[in-house]
Image (cartoon, rainbow, N blue to C red):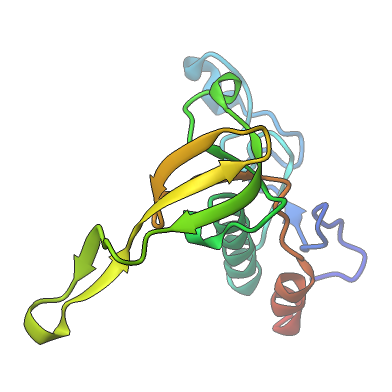
Length: 160
């Protein structure tokens, strides 16, 4: 990879898209009703295959996990909402506390002597006074969750 090659906003190296030659437009997509290149999503640049693409995939996976925590992973001050289908349906609130009823498990794994509890009922108390009855394994949406891209960029560049 050339030292002066343009990079992604997070610092991942990119290469010129071979399908559209960097224009972001493709004549092959007219039947789909647009001319945006599917290979680069209209950007004109792509991640090279191999370690760089693997590092970008890991970074993306970590970002998704940070934005979609289980209830037991939230802490005071996090801005969360129960999952929603459209952004306008989000009911954001700031977490005040999470109360867990450890004496009443709701989900178990294993059988016989290996059976163990993995989820409990919980009450998520928000600063605006709302109380959400959930389970500790309920997935929430978290606003403002970011992951440091530096280790992933270093992983991508280490094998360069």
